[in-house]
Length: 200
Ligand code: GTP
Ligand code: MG
Image 1 (cartoon, protein in one colour):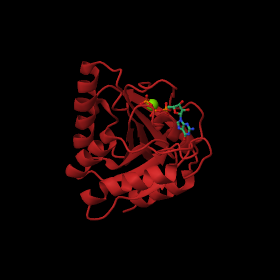
Image 2 (cartoon, helix red, strand yellow):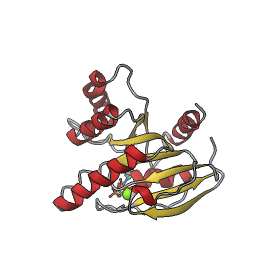
Image 3 (spheres, rainbow, N blue to C red):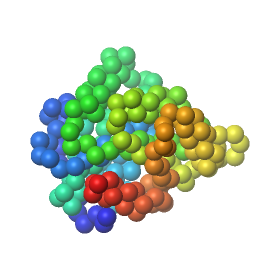
């Protein structure tokens, strides 16, 4: 599961413009600012291969990164960015839903959830939608290096609460992992997990 090489391949505005080969891929999904682009950079150990920002709404297209010339990591725009216009939000859902429903090479979705804040309804809704459409997902809790005093400040507590909220939705709970793009927590475990999913 080692990353020997990785390269940015292309940005696509729509699902049908994505690469047409049959290499397996993992989509990185989650709220704006949750750390999708940062996670990709941490996984492939490149500082700014995927562009990141303190301001939400940085990634606006579907971005394919080819790892070891054999599989793709896909950076997507975030959802739930309150400042986005209504039309931008509608576009998000039609274009990403199109991607998820039509991408035959999709092996799984990494659903990123910010562990430094309490569970958010929009993440639960997203998990629901993926579940209803039989899209396999792994919960990747991000920002596990961030901890604050007081209610909703501890990653472990927020993760537990999130798991409890969604546990009734599944006969078997989806796999999950704690990560930090700052400390590298969970990087090797997540790469191993993805290599196992690819080899099923
Ligand atoms: P959009 O492209 O806008 O949807 O956002 P994104 O999900 O790609 O988030 P991005 O990777 O751009 O990161 C957003 C902010 O969170 C940046 O300021 C990052 O430095 C910060 N960040 C990302 N991951 C971590 C993490 O693991 N720990 C901490 N402390 N900060 C993080
Ligand atoms: Mg991004």
